[in-house]
Length: 182
Image (cartoon, rainbow, N blue to C red; front, side, top):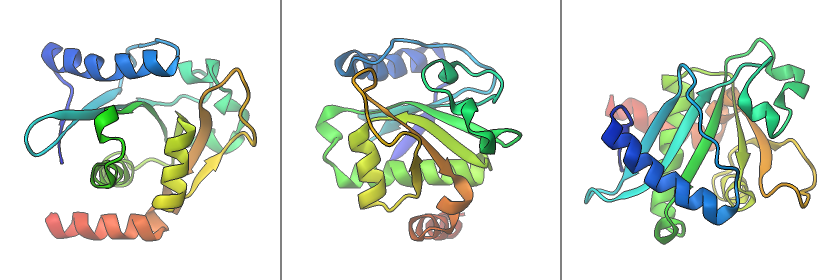
């Protein structure tokens, strides 16, 4: 898998063309904001076709826009920690069943939070199907912050302790591959 960091207007257009249709189809709130430290990525196949994207936002306990959708700041464990929010995580419909693409993205996400950002926690408002794949297929130690879904939400608020990911079997495999490449 190839990926690029969005750093030009042309890249931003491609990025928006990936996440906007998915958000509209899922009925998610169409919000977009610029925060210092935000990083956006586009994922490509080996043939150069875009197949997904994601965004990482720095999380500020006292005020972050995500707290308007779910009160992550009700969880004191996040206070005074380095936390990032995974947002606008999209895989095009035709690639959603591809285990290969999911593994590539999971490798990227794992390396990013452990090696690149060296954060303590990752939070997200996650699609329930994606949550189930992360937990059952990849055995990623993600914590659901709500026991039940309700009619007002079509997502699960989740929290991932990066240290637990690093120590997991999946995290160890990813880091071993990363070290071999470096």
